[in-house]
Image (cartoon, helix red, strand yellow):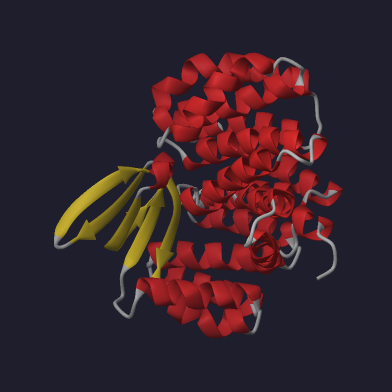
Length: 347
């Protein structure tokens, strides 16, 4: 039911026209476009009769009204076999864009059902069918994000497996290979792996990040600051967190920074319950993640809702209980299989 609700919302947002939209890094959204091709290097599209191109490493996700409408019945029935057959049929019809979009929808369904191994097989099949398919990195990102979202041993294992698979793709463009190294460090930190080794890797990656654009530089800085905090050297990073929180370059980095600043304020409120002002400042920071960083990974959005609820409960005020309840409701509805949803008290 959750995936079907998401699909219905997407259809409403995309409208009745057979239009596509593309989510880019930095929060930029291309709307009312027609995708013409998507590979590991470029996404080509048309808008208003004009052709345009964007580098593949900037693409976070693609949405096709026609593909979503085509798959709505299979999604409503949670029929992965039908979705897989539909994707294969699109490849036979030489419609690579629609085939890739259906593949992404199928991966979302299987991840929600806890079938990470099926997504591994899907990746393998897609790679054999189209080794240059643009959504191949997206499938691995989805596995990493979902694994970190669940926060379970199996989830961390899936995320680590996805990163290992990414690191084997030595023929991918340099920017994507760099992203694979960054994800390796991120997963190590989030899964309580070797933080010092992750820090050493991030310190090696940081000088190279700028060559791949501001979003990669901001993302690398955010994960590096997190590594410093986890290894006991985070005090000097305060001003950098503040700067990242206002930087529009990358939704991931901005969400990371806002969450870090919010947790600092929340920690003050938890140790000094009479300091309601800190709790309210924390709440504002967490709500900014939910509102301003929609393109951030799900595990960060779930954190924002979870800690937002805690901050609202501590902050007091006329609407505090309503805000806390809304955060919890959103968390349960959008991220039902997350670690944060499991940590909530029963409704």
